[in-house]
Amino acid sequence: MLFFILVLFIGLAASYFPISQSFSEHLSALVFLSFSASSRAPLCLAVLNIYESFNKMTVFIKTKTNCCGRSWCVRDPCGIMCAVVTWLLIAYGQVCVFLVLIYSWDQYPIHTFLNFVLFESFSALAVTSHLKTMMTDPGAVAKGDCTEETVERMQLLNGHTAIYKCQKCSSIKPDRAHHCSVCERCIRRMDHHCPWVNNCVGEGNQKFFVLFTMYIALLSMHALYWGIWQFVLCVGAEWQKCSSLTPPATTLLLIFLLFESILFAIFTAVMFGTQISSICNDETTIESMRSRNAMMDEEERQRNNSWKNLQLVFGGPFGLRWFNPLANPFVSRPTFEYSV
Image (tube, rainbow, N blue to C red; front, side, top):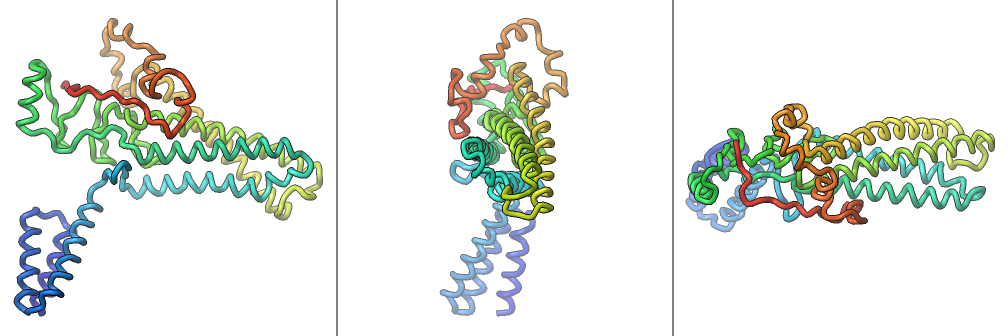
């Protein structure tokens, strides 16, 4: 029995640290044999199942990115914390609405109703865009696909194609793909890694990120207007029937709301403009830092079309689909797009 406990402890410890798969399998067999020798087969199977489950769980934890069905997840503590902070800031706006801003209903019902509808609409669209950006595969390249068979097959189809291997994730690196040290994956047309959405921004989710910055900017500007309007109303009414809180508490809530609105309105508006500019110029943030345009010939510059680039990112001709965070863009991925 003591021998079994020792083997089980070693097995659980080994499953957490990086070891070879064959060694893990040998430990599993050793756990099974140690219990079989004690003639406790049912207990043996139960403990073996626990060990295997723990082993799979630690492999899941040690993998930074994972596709759970249709969802994409990056297990980065800093990114998860930033995403939670984003939700809390949006939730704070909801607190201000229901404790302060909506109390102008008696005097200005139509104005209050329209502002409430706008605020809730922008909030819902912003949260949806954030979740879609965070849980959508940004365009990750298959990990460890740089095998001799794959290289030979590609060279047969595209005889002149040069192949570049990522030394960090052992994948065949497509043109304009970059390796993200946080996601530990190569991302097609990677723009940057954003901790606020806990994900890379690439060809698969750039539309959702642009919508997120746009809706947060609109939400912040609207909150700024509504907060100032309510503050003036409270001062004019001498803080009577304009809030469910005391005047000092109402003042603090409104001041922080105005500060938050100004800060994020400027920040997200700049991000939105930068993203639209990079899409129109067909140049990611990483490429702009590496002066990709300086290496482009005149013919390639002439082929660039801002409107066409926007259609490629947002998915088809201009319409309401562009502004819908639930509508996925039509990302066309060529079968082979590899070069040095």
